[in-house]
Amino acid sequence: MSDERYEIRFSGSGGQGIITAAVVLADALGSFDNKYVCQTQSYGPEARGGKSKAEVVISSSPIDYPKALEVDLLLAMTQTACDAYFFDIKPEGLLVVDSGLVEQLPTSRAVSIPFTHIARKEIGRELVANMVALGAVGYLSNQVGLGSLEKALLARVPKGTEKMNSEALQAGIEAARKIDIDSLPRSVLSDWDDEL
Amino acid sequence: MPANEQVKRVLLQGNEAIVAGALAAGCRFYAGYPITPASEISELLSVKLPEIGGTFIQMEDEIASMGAVIGASLAGTKSLTATSGPGFSLIQENLGYACVAEVPCVIVNVMRGGPSTGLPTSPSQGDVQMARWGTHGDHPIIVLAVSSVADCFSVTVKAFNLSEKYRVPVIILSDEVVAHTREAVALPESEQIRVIDRISPDVPPEWYKPYADNNRGVPDMASFGDGYRHHVTGLIHDEHGYPTQNPQEVEKFYKRIHGKISKGFQDIQVTKTYLMEDAEICVIAYGSVARSALKAVRLAREQGVKAGLVQLVTLFPFPRKSVDTYLRQCRVAIVPEMNMGQMSREISRVNQANCRIVKHNRVDGHLISPEEILKRIVKA
Image 1 (tube, chains in turn blue, red):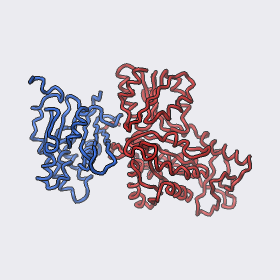
Image 2 (cartoon, each protein chain N blue to C red; image 1 turned 30 degrees about the vertical axis):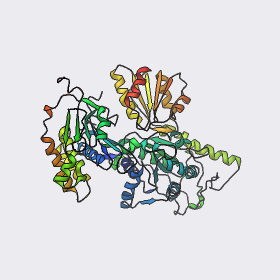
Image 3 (cartoon, one colour; image 1 turned 60 degrees about the vertical axis):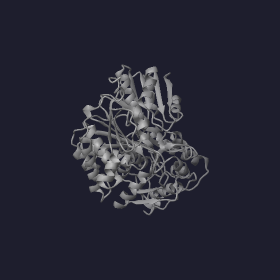
Image 4 (cartoon, rainbow over the protein chains, first blue to last red; image 1 turned 90 degrees about the vertical axis):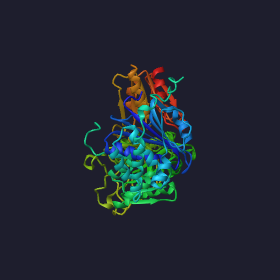
């Protein structure tokens, strides 16, 4: 029912920078790639912890309903988020998880990348795991110019943290480049049918 | 406008677009107290207003905020406050003062779940009737609703213009979804924006009658400090601004402050329609729900159902004339709302056309989905 829409949901827990990642993506698409874009979010009253969810709906025409209807790409940064939101993915959609935090996958059509581990080891700050994930989501979704993503990120992150965030973004893009999407099952639902 | 057209678009939140609209309309004073989901309006104005010579004050509460807004407007400055349900309750006393003293001002209420502290981070449309009748007494007021980021800009400009033109408080009802949704929008250039200012007296100060009637019912308004000394009170007053209980003067006063709104009804009532030309079923919606309704109507059309959307921008005075046209045209009107049915009762009230009114109410803290409305359309 959402033919020309492409919908991305970022999910995790409060404090992981879920909403910030979605805002940067929306800015890249709307301000630099000139696409129609709606970014929404839902969150609890807590500043840390609690479920956090942000969505980006992308279209080449004006967007009526601003929230996701059938998710094309779900990023899950916690097991809880993965379990809660997996069922909103469309069959040909893609699940992307932080492999260190989501160990039990509901599908084989999933990309597991250790975002938090990369942030800690390669960048030196766990804080930028969201930007590592954003890089991977940007690459895997194939909806946004990676240069636009970089520009939007530099415009949105706090002064003095540009280099760190930009390196995190690139690390995420590089990690995603190594994934062979075509080797994954075609559907998130029936991936084992052929094997049984 | 095609997406590839070379217009500079910026990614804004609904709350940020309200700020942009307020500044474009000439607002130079803000007093408020932070509250989710309206806080971004305060935060941004605390930076922007001082940069352009305006004034931002964080007050001790919303009662005082509304008082400060009235004071600033009486001194000639276009003024704004923004809050959510609990704060909206607190401003009501002073809001009545603004109605009776005919002080132009704009109040944004970003609705969240209520009553009381309710659901602080969830959307709702539970304050619709309160926006009309929250302060006591027979008072004139204008209530507008926003449904998108672009709306947040243009409706805020319209709110200031109506407020100045009719010397009446204007309430903008937003909700958590509209407030926090980010969209890339191209804001109009300042020369494309029509800004209306209150009319100042052109008589010498000693001849000035601050509440004298004229053919518009809207007295010329002098700013405090301009030499036009006059009395402002919450008591019912004569044309000089002094309290009166003289029945003729009292009745004349009430009739004028209500009459000025009905005289401007055509200008004040704003509705938008989509796919209504041949519609047999209409969805009447406002705020973020209007976007779900638009999707639902498009999906219904794909199934061959002649459905259309009537989006209410003006909620009060209730746009009876334009809604009546569509109630006569359609056999069913579906009214989806994130409350127990506050606007559907207005629609039922004006329905004289035997149109079947179907309520659809969702009160679980989530935006109504297109599928829910589609089901109602298909069943209708």
